[in-house]
Image 1: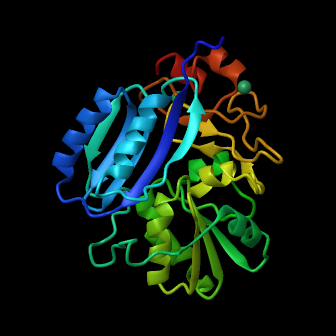
Image 2: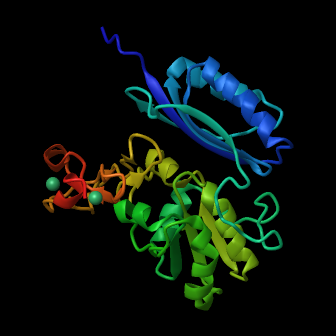
Length: 295
Ligand SMILES: [Zn+2]
Ligand SMILES: [Zn+2]
């Protein structure tokens, strides 16, 4: 008999006005702790964005609570089985923005008013194979490096707040093209696609539910995604392509194919690097001999 209790990791967001993010956060944290969840939830005046782990029964209780909450009817959850918690603590934090775009108030996007057309994994899969489309990865460079859709443009940025400038400098000539946007779970594209429309791009679509939903879709099964998907929990990366899985990154130390990031154990360095299981043990998570010696 399998005595191990099943755990799940869920990912979700909803853009919806929340009047008092501070008060909401306090009450929400209390509830999450009471049902023994761990994870990270951000709450702002514009909505909620969360990823939490817990025992299956508690995750189900949480989803039921959210679905019956007056603010979140129709909220969508991406659910992954896991062998334990994917986080060490439970945080619910009030924030100015759900994603740090830092857009000026006059150009800020309300996705409930303007956003790109949502397309299903199946339609996105078809669009990916057209040669007259521009595919934009709506994430950061290190996420792209671990895995991305074939043919997607790599954004040269380390934080989302650099996106508007990057778009203006690099994509201005493509305003009449069909633009495909995607990100991990969909939240970043809600604003990115809205921003592109506002900038004058004519035809902008976004992958509904993001890469993780695309990987679970029974028809496309992650086809045309290369590498694996960076996630912001202890798993670090998850497989997406179940048709033809590939590893596109190599170990920082020995050069063999590997797809796990770790941060250098030397706190002063903290460099994010890819490491294979063998080298992780051998170098104990340090990126170099210098860092290991504590210099
Ligand atoms: Zn290695
Ligand atoms: Zn280092």
